[in-house]
Length: 406
Ligand code: PMP
Image 1 (tube, rainbow, N blue to C red):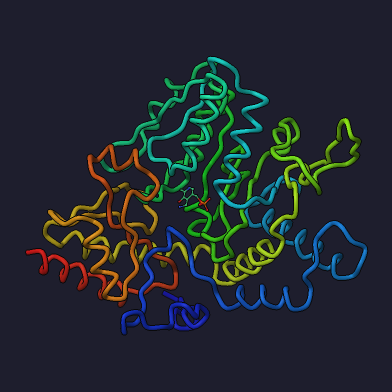
Image 2: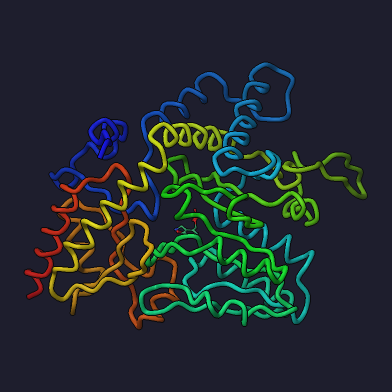
């Protein structure tokens, strides 16, 4: 396909080095993505020539800083097709965005005996905050389960929803299994019964076109570092109606209008949810990362990553004693697997010594591991800068691990 991989790889300095004397292969993109030189340079240039705290000064650089930050808000709005710019709230990341909603939405709408629905394949980030909310409010957490292929039992959703259900939270793409969930259909099912939906887009935003109006979700959250930007910046998209109704999550500077010693009034959206100095440099990096991706095209990226996924899956399925966890029909470029009788840490460490970075463990999704009765997996997750040649070397590494343990 028409994809200039050499040019792309040249943009990512970290990929062009040797680890243990070998060309570095980075297959841990589910955990975090690498940064193109355009992002790295933009951050450095921002600190060298513009840096100033936002929203606070009349001096020129503060105005420039503020404009750079607010321009990214508009860019994110366009990127995910939100209706309004003020529906984009900058946070620290996915976890922060979910905690914000679990707290604020929970304060406003969740009472004793109410119910929240999540799926059994959630990252701990989209599970623990809801458990905490349910504990705080004496509410009940209900679960959408998945089958052995890693597909959500969406046909059970209707029966799970009752008139006490206050919110449904589900991941767009599972970081542990790679499943792409039918989020539009899930939103429709929930909306038929007037239940709002939060979607965890941490693994989706970098792999697929996200249109929040088309999905019609009420909240959509993601992290900058998963989409080639810096760490410490994230996004909460929320429908205006909900963001207006729910209370602020944190108090402090930048989110208040009038303050007396007794009480304060708050700013309107989006500032009401952005207390304290925001990570405006992180936001700038997110803007550059979005430009970078838009230039290549998310459609092309998704197509190429699917090619990598299919290529690797086919080769791995041919290896005796290798089990893949997560065989959904609709999958992102994530392969979780185990080798018979070999602990995932042992395999991961040997693969590392061959200059290949994969992730081992439970991937912050312990209930998924419990379902399969395992303690963890080895996970290879591909990005658009990875290649089939790298996958070939990875297959050789897996065979070597097998050979060592045989
Ligand atoms: N949800 C999913 C599906 C994830 O993959 C991750 C990161 N691994 C998170 C949530 C949490 O993201 P962050 O640590 O950036 O807040």
